[in-house]
Length: 333
Image (tube, rainbow, N blue to C red; front, side, top):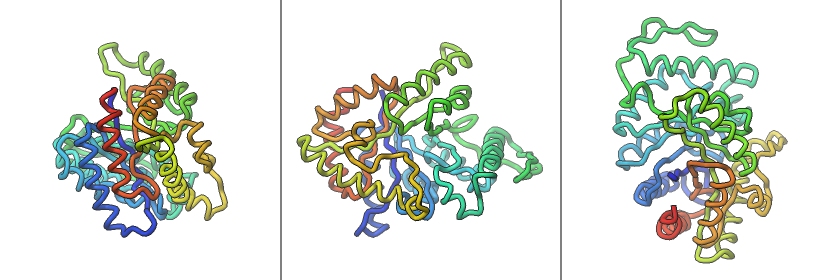
């Protein structure tokens, strides 16, 4: 069982953005020192939910501050990118990190964010498909040739190459069980935000599809869930702090949706409901350990992703929670 971290890098009221960046980079170094294997960074635009609209920039800093941590965006919002430029960024990050870069791909969860780039739901899927095809072609070949509806390239030399061949590992976000077919057929790692019950449907289906497409000696890709985590000295203290931070994070998450008077019904606004739906885990180390073990078993996971920094958690609060995770939770796995 390996553990990762998912990070929205959302805004904290009262904190300077440069302070948030610097504190988060320090925390990421501590992730590596604590035995965290992966760091996944979200991409969001025009919302306090994400202060990393250009993930490659922030990840470039991580490549030089860490030595073993694997990292990457979860996800690159492909309809927003010129694929030729993104190929170069992926190659640079993989070379800078000596082969530790891994990247997620997606269309973007919010129609309002992509709309600021003059992209709508009618053409986002088509653009996404073209960009993904171009990415794989460019990363695998010494010359790029492609002619599609949105992009066209003739004999473009691919001078930069990724260190990992044929390309860095891929990740994909899963919302519902029916979404696992494509990643399972292609051996792509998956992460879900769903409850254990729904996640179990996804992991069972993923394994069934994957085993029909790959030989037995292949390693099963990672199937994980992402959870808000806060660990304190006792359950009461931990839940009090986590409830406060979750409320601040939820406000950031809902920012653009609320402006457009739409409720996406992805995360519950009520903290107790979030706990019941397996989204939040808080408590003393023993409580958190037992809950993580339960979720791993019930959801059929081989990977578990934590959010240690979210909402209005201070750097000191996140570091304290992480320290307890390292000292009293992680050894149990």
